[in-house]
Amino acid sequence: MFSNDAQCRLLFTKESLMLDAFSRAVVSADASTSCIGSNKISELREYLAAANRRLDAVNAIASNASCMVSDAIAGIICENQGLIQAGGNCYPNRRMAACLRDGEIILRYVTYALLAGDASVLDDRCLNGLKETYAALGVPSTSAVRAVQIMKAQATAHIQDSPSEALAGAKLRKMGTTVAEDRCASLVAEASSYFDRVISALS
Ligand SMILES: CCC1=C(C)/C(=C/C2=NC(=C\c3[nH]c(/C=C4\NC(=O)[C@H](C)[C@H]4CC)c(C)c3CCC(=O)O)/C(CCC(=O)O)=C2C)NC1=O
Image (cartoon, rainbow, N blue to C red):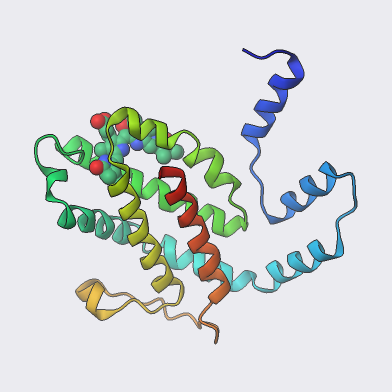
């Protein structure tokens, strides 16, 4: 399959790389045989300065994860009842369970990426080959994408600690953390970009 050892090794090192904001800076500097640039250093300084807010954001998602997932899957089923009828991909219970589990897996990898400040763990360990797996199993990607969109909206609300009464009802839960004046705009944008990565990987 591989024309030589080096190609084979490259493929495997590539696949097992899990980067964070720091190791990403090292790997890209090394790739161009340069020192860490001052731009990079100030980006990393910013990453450190905002680290507490990043942890609050990760915690806001992680500690609401099972509620977010069940709500997102309930949402796609409300919008498309065919999913739970014979022939639907959330029917029977075994598939419903697999779908809920996939929702949890995706959300978990998004939180890992948000913690690391880097998408590689999400790309390599979750999204790599997922579209093909879904195609092979007949999992409808439009519904999977819709579930991810719902989780993206929920994550925004949780990072800003502003889940709405209208949408959350009795399940409404606030973390009580101090939210920055800009309503954590950059963390919201970053988390959204990871959800968008999932969406484009499945589309
Ligand atoms: C760590 C990374 C990782 C990922 C991402 C992963 C996904 C994953 N989802 C699967 C199945 C599945 N995924 C779904 C998901 C859904 N069906 C729907 O209608 C909804 C749109 C959607 C939920 C949002 C279903 C129903 C199955 C089972 C399909 C079947 O067996 O027929 C399978 C096939 C094997 C299995 O059933 O466990 C894999 C590998 N597994 C992993 O280890």
